[in-house]
Length: 296
Image 1 (cartoon, rainbow, N blue to C red):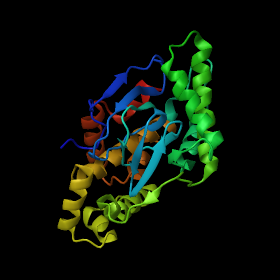
Image 2: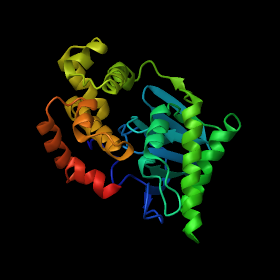
Image 3: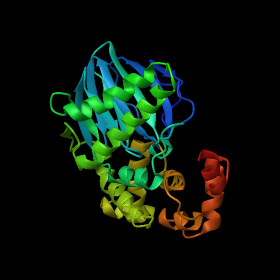
């Protein structure tokens, strides 16, 4: 089964569309025409993912929650959140937009990278947001998704889209940890490892990288049982997941801060800079310094 490190390049009934905006952060725009099917494998992205349900209905699996959705609802997925969408009705269609806040700049718009980084770190709201309950968030998501699907007619269309995404980030940073609508699923296997995923993320915020036995202890599992459950639900070994999150976070810090590479290495939990450098090059194909230079 494919690993959830990145969303698979091809999924049943999914149509991928290259973004018309080539110079900045809209990394993917796509339309997904879905048929009723069982949940496959939770996956995650390094970017923010915004979604607008055009028609149909179904469920979003987000961590240990199952959240129903219907036409008109919007979806917000934060970087690194395990998730998967399923349809419960024929003709279910979603439009998605993925973007990196650290790259929100155009020829006429250059927001301060430190401020962008602060906004991103303050974002906690995710899930499904019906427009009747969350009109501001729903409008803030619908506008950039709709706008990004249309080819730009002039340079200020790109500015307008970037400004819309900045407005959304500000809203999300002020929304707290609201997770929209949804229900908890006590029997879901992903719920069994959520203490480990949450604890790992919180520790990494302090520059501490938990080991697999430490993550297992948070779930009250033996390391071997934890590795089996984790691999079944996440589609990869926990060590691979740990490394992926560390490197994704390092890439985000390289673009959103002016911190030295050595400090970023420490903040994402590496104790050996040589190991960090080697793994970063293996993942991104360039050194951390070159990655920052090439993307800025």
